[in-house]
Image (cartoon, rainbow, N blue to C red; front, side, top):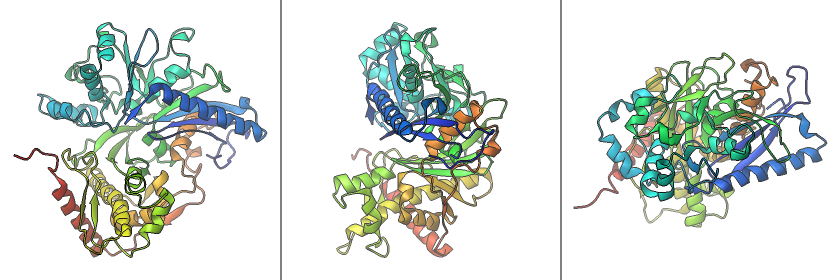
Length: 505
């Protein structure tokens, strides 16, 4: 549960939150404080989580009628394709981290007009973009190509798919609901970053014929009716009143409503958002422009600079599952603390290239500095440091684009629970790291947006301090000279990993 506060005089109101991520699904119920996927399995995971959470909610003496609304936070860019006639998926979802689109990305970057895409949609072509995943599906999955030619193809990010099915799909009285919000749509490369609507020139660049394709309507992230209501299950009839991409939801969960506020979510990957205010900032330093949130009801949208690290928690998975260094994620800190430093070891965790601010597609995971004295603890430290070095590089780029440095960084996600990682982050970035006790910022953000749409809260001023109790603050513990020396060694390691996947003559 979130921390309880009084809002609008009714302390009996609760808000549910679906958090559908890359490796897990959660359904949390808050009081007023605060690769490939099978699309049907994604839906079942949500249904199961709702059932379990509602059962626990009832067991604690509450009634489902107290749950005023539901918010949805989802993994972004992952693309689902389905048949509009049957409502059934045509293939597995193409996950945001899938790199099979890399040849298409290289082809698109060489096409006329590619250099201006970032000014229109906020990002350059990359393997994560939904638009490029659709091109890949049309080229490689016959069922998708047939549905497209027949005018029966619907595509959307995970939010669109879940909202469509949770509302009843093709069986919904009055017809199915096809919607997405602007935080998700801003990651597809089909949406104009300024108008927050589909752009004809962008669709044309990617060869999309709107007459053959059903795309979801783009709406604000917080809305009392646009997302419909659950059609079945223990919460049937409960409104879905908010929808945000997971990273935007985390920013809302941290109360990042002012320009200059930033957060980093340490999950499978690591994702940073920096609130730049009501106008987008097009990066000159390898970042992406995105919609931070659009909470509707006459409120101006907020934009963000974004940078992503592809390997964060998945790097720990590599040590646990592939190398058998330890038997659980919780043991990583203990292993890292078994040595005083990294012993000169640097691990460029480029398992699928490097993202912002480097954008090196042909880098591959590489260990540098191994000696006869290297121990598991050194490699564990180097794995944690890889996340922190890349995050620090993104923070530098954000400071350059925005014109001023951050004064602190709010953090959440599984890896944020590592004290070693968070202290290392403060050391390498040179700014304090602020970790709230409430780690489920993504779920909290979706719940806050849903409560805002349905009157549980009246305004953003009531949301800023929800879920912020019990914070831990990690302050930089090394001098600037040491920080710069370690950052230079990391930069050298990155350069040496470049081109590893290039063909050798």
